[in-house]
Length: 165
Image (cartoon, rainbow, N blue to C red):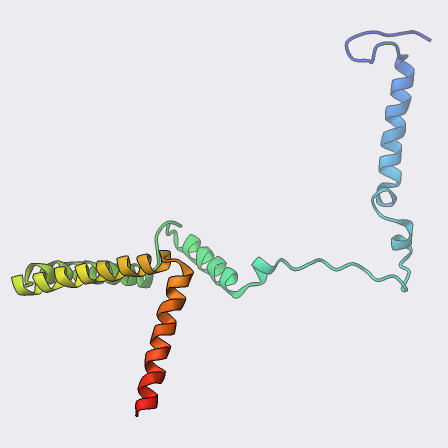
């Protein structure tokens, strides 16, 4: 036996051993290729076994995916690029864009056409809203016994008026 420590072989192993193991591997691979990958019971065709079925991909099974795929295939056959949108979608987007622009213009014109009286009313309304919010905050900060006392006063005046009536 010669010990070969060349570039192609593993150092310390005889060359004959490497050739034998490689040839055995190829023989096993060629002779029993089916039995390596599958269980022996599956090869026999045992009718008691339940054969596995391929699972369905829920994305590919959906209608929207199928329609999109069909449309992509049609566009590819026609030679259209994938980036181009269908004509209906382009028209709808154009209409939406125009509608948004019209609304913005109308709002700007409405602001410009407001009379000084309307502007002053709007300012007063905003000030009143701010005052109400500040009052609510102050009431929330008040101690509990003050709130209870106010409630008692209200109920006592209501019951006094009911007795007089």
